[in-house]
Image (cartoon, rainbow, N blue to C red):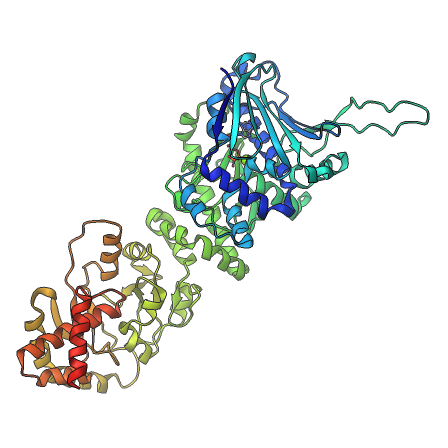
Length: 630
Ligand code: ADP
Ligand code: MG
């Protein structure tokens, strides 16, 4: 095939620009990224070779080789891993095949610091070569193809690349970086070794370099280096004992395994023993990756069997609601030379997945009790994900519920657990009260909270979209029922002081408001399911309630926004018999006036839910008419 010139996907160009100006002072990570890719390629080959030995082409000594050339101003990183064919080069190098990429780049602001964080969510990968190089030549051949199937890819990082078929005798990938003017510092043996030590010590394959030549003796020619040595530990980090590992070791490995360039929030490293034995090394990232909410989010936990990479990021390893966990599981029990499909169906895999999820949950529990600040950070990034667990993982529902955090009328910052709430419950209170709303602000200002404020009863303020589903699956915690304060009748009569006197007062007020109730029922007709008095309102004249088993107004709005065709559920209008407007309405005679009044009361209640009246302009007109008659 002749030489072809192709363009990078638009997002790749954007990524390159962003990277070059936001990672300017962190250029050395290019080496980490290239070695990380080489290691992944070696992993993939070793796995494929378990069922097809021929792929090794007689050379199973998997390794990475790093070299440099002062004269030519190049650094070369080569591996004898899986390599790529023509099609793979085009789709892997030059495009970013992750859904949501376009939206992600749309969010970039041009603000260096902010964008640098975003890039962390994204990962930089191969393109980081252009931090130090103004031209990159990648030559590769896929294991199992013949020498004339080599592919050469060349780019100057300017938005296009050339690609052509070449001969490559050795399988694997070789990357030559032609260094930029200002990247001289990397043409140095000591510098390269120190970067490898810093970032790639934990890579489970040997990284080799030429041994530096001894300085030339006086009067003699400088000797040419020929001896090769391994410059990293080259053992699987998770298989080493905890006591010999530092935080730096753990963090370095995290960046490789998670394709992140920031340190993780925390990690857990343990050998799990039982019916099946396996080691886990799990991490929680500091920041949610940009595609956490995409159906096919890419990276997750990797499975190894006795250090041989098998597969990654599948729901066979970790349930979906724990998809934020990164790291590895290494089993000593699973068979090696069987297909992935057979492994996926084995009872051992299933048991490992269950054990690993349990371990993650207990790890989170420890984090919550011992490192509250870190847990809060975790919660703000991944809390919504964990909530899915209540719905998905019936068996672990209790522990997951105990890990949930909410805002409440007592504490804003999504920091209230059910346990905290229960400890603060009033005497006589036997339910956990919550309100679901579109935003924290609208939850907070809801008229439904008035009586709770008066009685000093805490209410959880739920404004995450998933909360509607969460509360439909979670009906109690620790024997206390969860009760929405916007649904069904409310009976707080057992809580507080002077309950009997209050009850009596309310009954009297309700009686006096009967005419108003009647007029409203007539005027509103079938826009409402019912009109009734309530004692839940103190300052507001009216509010809307859903019937106990109906969908809440918030849920209806969420579904409609998502384009679903849901039937409108009629609300119940509850009115405050002590409110001056209600008293006036009771006395009102003019039919027209009553109709306007009823409309206004109803629409006000809609507004108080953070929603829009059906006819906003009509609402304004009626309010203005009333103001003028004042
Ligand atoms: P990531 O490693 O997060 O997938 P990169 O940008 O680092 O992203 O690499 C993109 C893809 O290019 C890899 O997923 C892999 O398929 C391919 N690739 C990169 N380097 C190599 C290599 N040395 N050998 C084989 N494939 C490679
Ligand atoms: Mg990579």
